[in-house]
Each structure stands twice: as structure tokens, then as C-alpha cells.
Length: 394
Image (cartoon, rainbow, N blue to C red; front, side, top):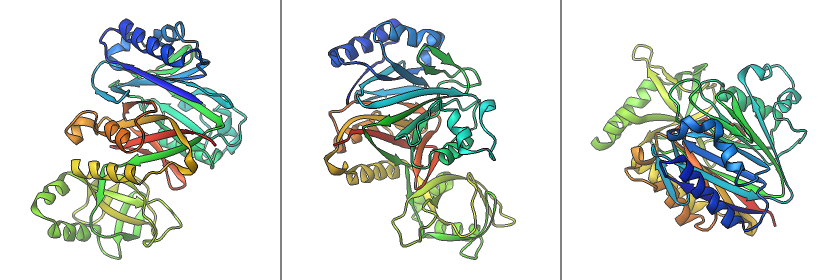
């Protein structure tokens, strides 16, 4: 398994394509380009239809997939809201790649079988290592897709991110081989001789203590530890330093423990969701996720220092198992993260290189939502940076 990548921030599409393809050809050094990932900023939107044709005329990829972006990531750089093309290439013996595309109308009904969901991936593979998804947020219900694919492929890691760069339906682009789509979801099923690790940094830190949801209805929490949620929030607020009270007023989140068989004493992994509203009359809170009685939650704060410290901790604790060698990384970062949240450019990619690996290629983009597993399910996240780390098996 061999991977390489290139990035260009030239405002000229022709020069950008020339830059990245020339660099990839040089690095491949005669190796077969089995798979390519391509991410292109919306500055080049007038040429979306011809992008893959222009690239494949120079590099004969067997399979190439990708999408539009508000900014691209590659070669140690994060080009936020700037012109950019990021391209990676993999020479992948003993690895099978099956691209697919579907629209919302083609998806199975909730009561249909796992086989119905497998049909949309155009593959007979029973247990692929990973599925990579690039949905258009204006035309596909991504969380519905994730529930269906988790149902069909319970042992598969599903990763990806929402296409970005467009501000209304029809403005995003999805790339699969010689075709460009403006709606639906582009995807890739990958199986074979490799390993995959997934890391997710959610930009938050916990405050207070874990609590049990004792009364709830759909996405409304009515009681926490047999008391009103608004009471718990007030207690937290009163005990915070003055500088953190400002953060809490603007960036209070809730984390939901994702190991459904876990307890408060287990190692805790939370999925972070927005608090949509606080009802002062009933004392309840509405959150951006369905919740059930008995689940464990904890309030969180999202701010720059929390985002930096969480990512540092996660990366410093990561170890590649069994001596497996990292070959490539896909990085998907929220458009609400980057310089906007962290106050500096290239923050996350530099930390990754410093802590994990500064030799293998990193390719990705700034997205409208990041897809990655937490616990035993796959979720659509916001404000995260996620890393899909491809490794060579021993």
C-alpha cells in the first residue's frame, strides 16, 4: 500500500490541476493509481463538471471520488475559504474499491431489510473495512442514511463529511470517476488488506458531573437526576468563574454517553449536541438528538481552549497498534472550527503531524458536518475535526 498527496491554492484552475497532478505523478514513480480522493474549493465551481476529466487525462485513476469544499486541507496546510485543490492517490494491492451514488428517493424504507441497503452500495461485500460518504446536505437526510448503513453493515467503520462550498441546493458537487452530481450522496466501499483507525475531536470540555435522564420525550429532557434541567444548569452557572460564565451563556452543549451498556464509572465517550432551547416555564431543555430515559448525559462548554486541549489529549493518547504503519489520513474539519474557533490557521493539521505522523500524506476539506463512529453507531457531528487513519496490515 502506497499513498501520496498534493495541494495547490492557485486561483487558476488550470495551474492548480497542473501543480497537483505533476506532483502526484512524480511521487507515484510508476506505481498504479488505484484510488484518488479529490476536494475542490467553490472558487472553481464553474468548472466542476470538467474537473475529473481534466485530472484523469493526466493520471489514469481506476477510481476517483470527492466533493466540493469551502476550503481544502493537504500537505500540512489548511486553506480556509481560499482557492484550493487537494488530491491524494493510492496504489492499493489487495484492496477493493467500489464507488456508488444514490439520491434520497432511491433509499429503502425504514422497515426494509439490510439487503435493501446493501443494494445502494453496488457491492456484494458483506463486511467491508470502511464506507466513505460525501453527502450533499441540501438533498439527502444524512442521519437516515447512517442509520440504514449501520443496520446493513454493523461491523464496518463509516466515515466522511458533508460537501460544502454551496449556499443553496444545486451548488455543491459530488465527484465519482467521470461523473459530477449536484445532489444525492457520493460514496466508496473499501475492503481488503488494510486497517483503519478513526479519531474525533469535538471541541468541548465537560463541566459538572454526569447525570441520568430520568424523564424525557423524543428530544426534550424533562428531568435530570429527578430534578429539572434548568435547576442543574443554574447550579453549574453559579459555581463557574466569571470568565467561564460568558462562555456558558454562548456555548453550552450537552454530551450523551454513547456506550449504551455503559455506566458512569466506565471510560466516558460522549457525543456532543446543541441545546436548542431552554423552557423557563417547564424547566425542560430541547436538544439536537433523540434521548431516552436512563441515558447518561453531561453538560459541556465549547471554546477555543477546550478545542485545543481536547485535540492535544486525544492525539497524545493515540497509539498505532501492533506496529502497523500509517500510510495515509483523511481529515475532515468543520467550517466552524479552524481559524474561526482556534484563532490561527493550520492548527489541527499541525498538531496531528506533531503528535501522530509527519511523513504520510494528509488530505481533506472543511465540511458542513463530519461523519464518524462513536461507540457502536455512526453519527453526523458538527464543530469537530475527524481523522481517518489508513494503515498497512502486518
